[in-house]
Image: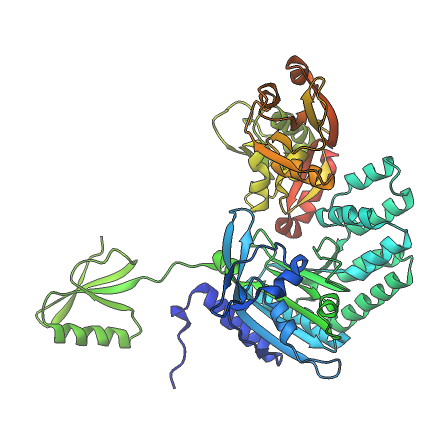
Length: 371
Length: 202
């Protein structure tokens, strides 16, 4: 059987293969789906998508369909997982989303995993390890930020913060904006005590041990205590593993409280200016879709990662020839057998980088200087 | 090395002075006005001058690790960046202004001229007010004078321009000042350097 020479794959395809192999090694199975989905799925869960704009069209039988802007919703809709029988799937798919910057639709390549059913501590640790391994496959220099929504919610509850103020404060948390928290104090909208605790929360961006120390001092409710213990246990399981020093506890990880619960995370590689991996636990979304299961997963933005890892195509060898077809074919095959990439051409090609040039004349190859 | 995007113009120069006195001076930055990139004398930071409204783009895209930008730009374009410090400079407010004596007719669609489409939209959406937005790029004050709009949404510093044009503020939207922003990914990898600059600027 022939082996696959990965040189012919694009960076995006290579990354997809690497991640696919990685996900499979954890016993996840590939989930394939069509590019179309009934529009109603997105209409009902508009807030889950960062932008409700989707490409829609009518099918032959009059159904409103959409080009899929998201994979998670489709997997969740179709899952047969229960709290007893879990499903672990991975996907490598394209999604179509509206890009507010260019005001047009964009094709986005994603590879990701979803764990549906009984989300226990072992599966949370497993997903975190898979996220670390995915980042490590993309770059030598990476960071995985982990946050816990229940801890933040618990703090809001503990200090009796009302719903409209929570939105504002969550934005400050996401932006690491300390100064506007002070402004709220001077407007008497929050107490000094809460402001000081919340500012500590915003400032946390540390390795697990140091961060957990800081978190411990902030606990004022049972929910926070529970979230703290969960995080603590998670890092206890992970302790000593590969790349654990790349984890930071950081509460600026963006997450919608309506869909996510407990752990959320976000991965960065040094070569890319924005997050390359996003994920978390979304039991609340599953519940909204009337599925009584736990749900956890992440997606890697394969297309973006490929753009920063893009390498120029390798140069080829050219044989210039204008006669003796049989002879030149044979000469080219001999070079190909040695592993060279060979193109036969009448004139010098302009569409490709050239390594070596030969001229085929009188039954033999003569190397020509490449100017 | 930390890349810093500074807004061209008076405010950018003032911010540079603050950075210079915080230990990040560059000998030739203010002398050569055509050059766009400068390195600090100690080699720890690199500055570049960009159009004020582009600072957030340079930072969001990671071309600059940090940048200096007005809160108005952050509110209008909502870039995905960390807003790490209020530099307490360039203070002004975003306000709604109209011709002196203007009376709002709440039964009709309000015509709003502005440079800040999103800020205006957010403000009136919260009030459930039907509006017609007119996007302008400058001389906003002209719109109500010529009857093209009922009101304008714009930055008000001293109110002098409004006064000279027989206009006045009818509602404040929010207070604006200059902010230090950071790219989210580079903050992960250069946190100590960025935090040092932030502390020295405080």
